[in-house]
Length: 626
Image (cartoon, rainbow, N blue to C red; front, side, top):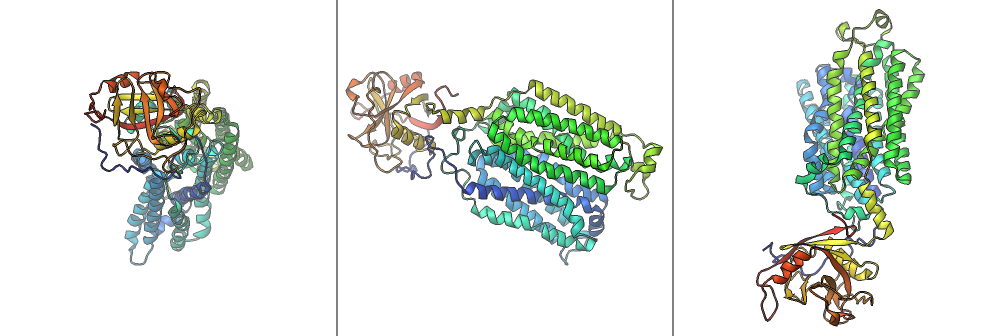
């Protein structure tokens, strides 16, 4: 026996919150939720990077080494690599609302710790430990805010807005990096203004936390598309499904790892450029051009992707242009071209490289649907994080001492007279270029997207018949619904299935050779209601008859008294034609039907002597669904 019906409410929930697969709609509040997520990502990026451009003042204010200041940013990579999987599991397990609230409020708490480190009662030696704790909390918040957009966009936005919504979140991430890099030198002319910076950077986190109160649910009352109804793969099977997906593995190995080149280049850029005569202003302008045009690229390419629905083709084009631009960046630096040429090529690199991340995350969801989206995105992002860490650690080993010419033009900032810190990064740049070319060629040649999610969207638009699987104590029964002929009955049935109304329902009447009946949560055979109230009218179609074993009809007390109960015939029953609404038929699981017919019943009431239940119901997009 499965479960108990003691706590089952015999009255179905209001039709408003029910998921109705025959009607898909979106809600205006999705934009407000999107603003909250975007602000959280922007705020988190600012908190991550804001010490990088004022490292000398941070070093003095916190009375630590440059290495310690660098760790205020590096801790984000470490935390992200360690906690990505637990955080994405929590998002998939407890929902989008949980992820938003956790990420937003952890971000605010971490930012508050940063501010507390500047308060008067904190000694100079106590400032750094407190601000470091704040950075750790913000880094943990990032594992929620960074992996929410793809899942959120899928759940709340229609298919023609999903990629744009996802791209907007990553665009604000770039905006945060830009603000966190450019504004600190303007706000902090000396170390005594660092407290002001920490207070100002807390403002976006406070606004995002305020907006989080508007998030009322993880999912919209009515799904945005048909694919959103698919039952997610159990978490213990996620890794098995990912490692058996050829498309996802290729995407992971080529684009996921390839994206680490952007992080590597931006991290080492100052060290790469300064021996060739480029000062910090030139480096900053290069990064600024990449970020600004990256922000534009994310929004523009997200819009184009939604309009064309050509994710694979667009990603391959952008990846190719991005790799070519990175190669030119290396060549321009090594050959000491004028700075304005570098600004132009960095702008092209940003325009092409930045959108690859949101587009490839969408591709990863398309190739693995219906695997939980946050987990898929998180694992994909780990490839980039780990690739960056390995590259930053390994590549400096291939550097060379600078030539006499380089020493004569270098613009490096020398700390404590350590001239040995100046290195020629020509070989690492060539290694990155060759590595990137290999990855993009493999991606173009071997990756082919299956578009699992888009296929479900097409089913929605093409009005393909739907099916569900009843998971019973004795096995599964899959039934195909006649949605076109019986729209009311199917809408009611699918809505009840989607709301878990039939979970734990007993088969309360079982007549061998005739039919088996269920659908009453009370288990008495006298209860159950439709989604609109007590009853809905018959939908008798002259072409749908009880003509064979496995026909599914609404059980009723007479004309126009359909509620939630239904029955499945064991044989042809012409005497029922014209009296009961036939709305479906069994297409698989006849062996389960055989087992149900064999069950011993009370000879007077026809109630099975052993409780047999519907454990749960899976809604499919078409009769041939897995």
